[in-house]
Image (cartoon, rainbow, N blue to C red; front, side):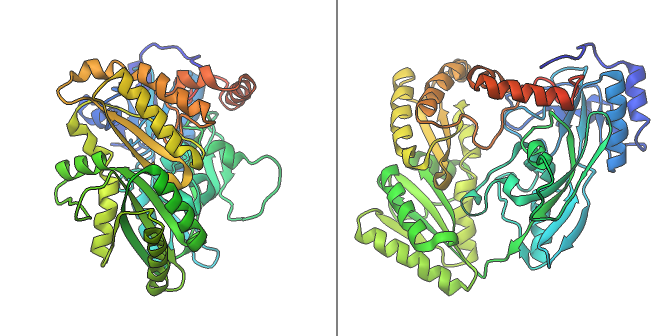
Length: 476
């Protein structure tokens, strides 16, 4: 839905935008701009002549008002941790609107268990603010030390706690946003029940900056778990992991807060490339599961539940071995082995990545069918499929064969996508589970989305953004 002129931003217009902010908040030098056009996977290299860093909602409003008047495309950017290129400007006609200076925690309400904050607050800081108030904010991502709340909302981020707490959308009561016209949408409501018409909050969450710029949010907080226990489990196959999941859900209920599936090859990559990483078990197993139990009662209660799950699983022959964390340091080590698995693939060469979801019961079938197709297409490929088995979201990544040419391997990205996403579609799944659409999957969305749904999405986009200035070329 590219409707804007692609001519480069003029010096005069750049100066007009820069004048809207205090000195030092507009970046024009290439060296200063570089971090905002380079994303961490090196797949999308962008360019722009201007990065704006407002610190107030009113400054965002002034920027978008001028952008609308001059038909200047705007790329909203949070922590620049996105994996589908949604935050990367594509031409010198576009300006980057960074939310990094919009970073106030406005209020923590311990009685209503809410936090009101700016969109530029880093996720880790939000977690710490909740903890300081004796509460808990459960969103947890590998990039939590640098990603921002606004970006989490724009992408409807998932993470490791979706099983118990839901996606970012489920953790948000209200949003504040600036529309392309410069008007401010005042939606910072702390209500848990509000049926006054269409839910514009949920429309903006997950819209990837294509409708408006989210500038603030009201987040749900939860009682801090009184006890948390973690186990690293070795088993023979994803089918056995599924049996363990069923057992854990039956015995733990809502106390099961994480259930992460990992292959042996992923663990080997992590040990090889992560300082201090070690094998949690005494011998190798084909597959692993990280299980976390959180109790509102005590650590003893969490340990009793976890031990009951594992004892039953051993008796049923579902698991081969398990290590239960004996300290907070042990638990952190177990989690680090999971969180580093994505980055540990980079030193192994090219990696063709997928972020897919299928019905939970069909995850083993998906892995079996996709693995067979990938091996047939590129013999020797090393599949690193890991992720959130509890909600059916698998990061199906394929590392190049040992000794293969990296560029030749990556050139087959589209071909492999067709194979893997074809299996996903046949199983009633999604080719975008938690990373969004951005640039990477835009064309595939257009090819595969139901025509009626796609028409509605385009209509909504046109209503919010009639001049097509909001993050053009992304999602639609």
